[in-house]
Amino acid sequence: MIDGAIEIGWHGVRLVMLPDRCVWLPDAGSVLVADMHLGKPASFRAMGVPVPEAVTGRDLHRISALLGITGAKRLIVLGDLIHDAAALQQRTLDAVRAWRGSLGSIEINLVVGNHDRRARTCEPLGVRALGDRAVVGGVVLTHEPPRIDQEPTLCGHIHPVVSVGDGPRRVRSACFWFGGMTGILPAFGSFTGGQLVACEGAAVFAAGERSVVPVTRAAGALCVGDSDGIAAETAYDRL
Image (cartoon, rainbow, N blue to C red; front, side, top):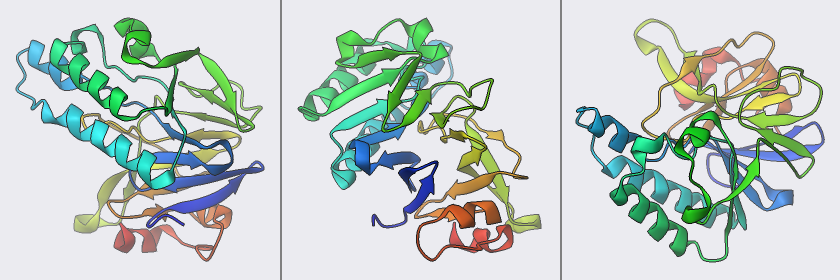
């Protein structure tokens, strides 16, 4: 098992969550991330907001590290690979192309998200677009959560965040959220906001700095291993 990761059995699928906000599907040889929003710093700089370009480079390095740790042969982005058209500055394009070249034969697929439609680029970056929906390893992949919860679906778009702890010990953490047949991945991009999600009736896992932590009892019950029964009141100390 990868350090800090948690494996769950979800609708017959073996799924591993890693602290760096990704899902590894071992049986499909694929790493899934959502909402990278590459080039967002360039978009903000174009509006006069001083944001360091290094953010994009760090996120690309994180992806490379995850692919190395898992040995994945394929990276699938669940939408919003690129932030918008203004993000496609030459500097950003050069960085993404160099990164893509460094990955060799690893396949990169994109489930198209709302921001990708605005950016209107994909193939020039060595990324294969799968359209709005794909099926991999028995799981449906989309960008936005489905309107009808009827088949196992992994998606992004929401940028889910959970609040853990009380008073001065309260912290917000990006999280993995599972409810019914829908699983929502945290936003992968470093320069992205987050939306608080409800924990009641859901299995919620906080993506801590060093480990993934079950926040709800429903989450603990899904774990493969000895994490059963972890309650929200104990999650803070493990983030």
